[in-house]
Amino acid sequence: MLHGIQDILNANIRILRDIILLPEDQKQEKQNLKNIIEKTTNTASEIYKKLDMIVSTNEGRDLFNQFIEIRKEYSTYINKAVNYAMKDKDDQATALVFGEIANVQRVYFNKLAEFTELQKTYMDNAK
Image 1 (tube, rainbow, N blue to C red):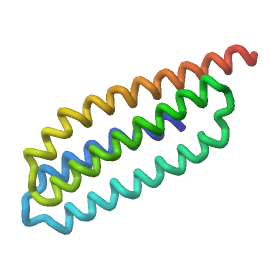
Image 2 (image 1 turned 30 degrees about the horizontal axis):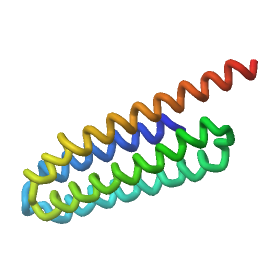
Image 3 (image 1 turned 60 degrees about the vertical axis):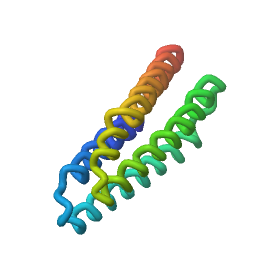
């Protein structure tokens, strides 16, 4: 499940890059790509709902809650960058991609790695 979230984060940043790179007259294609970001974000929401139901330890819940907070921050920046790109404010969108989004995504990936390690520890201890 966690790899699915990581894949979605990587896909969304690539799609955002594509929106930024498309010429101004490609409004429909930009909208189509924006729709894909919305769809993959909904898929991530479903993964989080499943995780929410199965994470039961205090340490796991703490990390899960950190994901949720990081995800909110990440989503805010992604949405802001997409809105800039849709309005052909590519410089602002690019600045977000290489600034705030990159920073938050790094933290996000680190928390996903921590959670994966926690899961491995629990599986090893269950043997």
